[in-house]
Image (cartoon, rainbow, N blue to C red; front, side, top):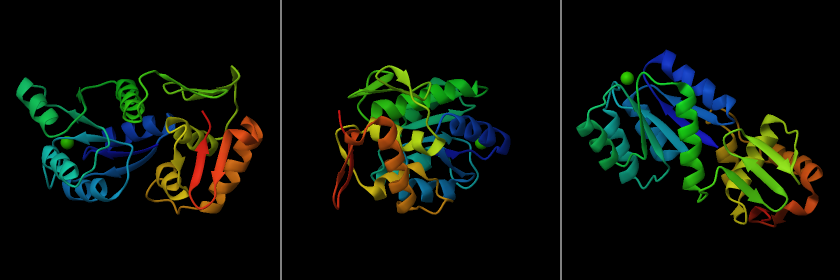
Length: 218
Ligand code: CA
C-alpha cells in the first residue's frame, strides 16, 4: 500500500513516515502545498495523511484540488486546529478522518490502516481469502491458521492482492502500489516475488491472466 504524507514539520513527517513504513506502507513525502497538490493529483495513492498548515497552499485547498481531479483515496487530516468549524471544513473538503496534534503516531497508523481497508471494501480487521488470512493491523498473514514468514516485499504484494482478492490486478497497478515514487518500478522482480509467494501459499492461490495481471483466489 502506498501512502502520501504531507507535512512541513520535518520531525513529524519523519515520525509518521517511519511508523507507516514499519507497518508495511511505502511512503512518498511532500513538504509544501504545491508538491502535495502535484503528487496527489498524479500518483495513485492508497491513502494520504495531510497537514493543514502548509507553506504554499492551505491543506484544505490541496484536498479540494485532489478531489476536483477525481482522486478518491482516503485522506486523514493531521492538524493542530481542533475547533468544530475546522473539522467540519475538513470533512466538507473531502477528508475521511481527523487526528489533532499532539498525537500518538500509533493512532495515526491504526486509523490509516482502517481507512485503506474500508476503501477496499473490507469492514473487518481480518481479510480472509481462501486459505489465507491477513490481519490488517498486525500485518501478519496466516495460511490454514499458521503464520507465514514473508519478506517485506512479499508482504506488500500479498497484502495488496488480499485487499483486492478476487479482482484482477495488473502488473502496472501492483508496481504503482508496492514501490514508492523514488524507486524504479521493476516488473521482473514482481514476477519473481509472485513466484516465491506461490511456493509459500500454493501455486493455485495466485492466478496469472495473460496480458491482464494477477488475481488472488478467494
Ligand atoms: Ca504544518
